[in-house]
Length: 299
Image (cartoon, rainbow, N blue to C red):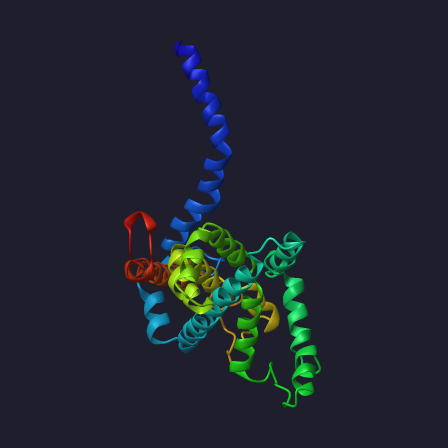
């Protein structure tokens, strides 16, 4: 019995071994190492030298580009996440039917989320928003002047926001699953009471979807803070024009792998972790005022 128990234990360790090794090598050890490096001066070519909080002091009080990256990232998150969620919910409601070929439509709308983070799509986006691109051509057709997307910092940032909104597929599928869990009898009862479509959406759909909205808001906020590839490709790795697309992750990358200030880059990574943790906590704490759980019978 003891030998059999040992054999079962060894078999279990054998199967979980790859995950444990991968977690240690690619997650836990890098996290601990980056925390240590954030208190050092390290350029990857000489041994790290302990300098305490100097990296954090430099970022907070001396590095103007750091605060520019923070501002740009918060604008990107505040503009992109609500628009993305609203667009995803609208499409999910349109696709919440049993019409013919509805599965094909759902697949087509989900495709941008699969390919949206690729280098090829970012390059395509640059051409679409170029001075002679399709977007400016469409703007000209309706009678407006062409926009210099790559010459105006705010326009360039909104170009990135539009790309993030276009990648709404994953949120759409989650909203669609939530919509299918709302009992049709609720809408039938509301119709009997004379409620119109907007009242049904406001009084039934939104409260019943509020846990799903909370989940999507948290996941999309975290993903927005980690956005890197579109900003890197569209701005050619500079964050231009005039640092208008200098997202936090892009500046972190430039700190570490362009300027070789690995200590400052590690400090930036930990500050971003704290910022995301605080925003997530705020969303969770605010949820008691607007998230409806049926099991509790209220908000």
